[in-house]
Length: 94
Image (cartoon, rainbow, N blue to C red; front, side, top):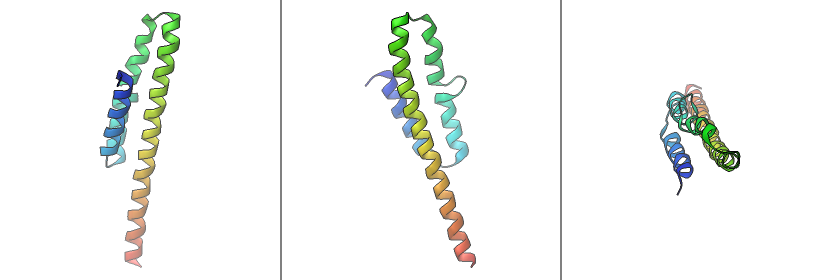
């Protein structure tokens, strides 16, 4: 497993552990924020040759997309859980 795969796996695990939208946004910042892991990798590309930039940039973008997909899925799961909780509460009130 390479560095990018490890980042994606770590992000997925951290997102899965997030129980509130705020927790999830904090987890997101660790990977996609101003000083997040992916952002730092992108900044480091300036020192690479043109050929290295192409391959490394593509790999970083794949990892970034995987992290964003995991983030979106978890956001939806949290929203669904919140909606379900509201519906149950309303059903009990009726």
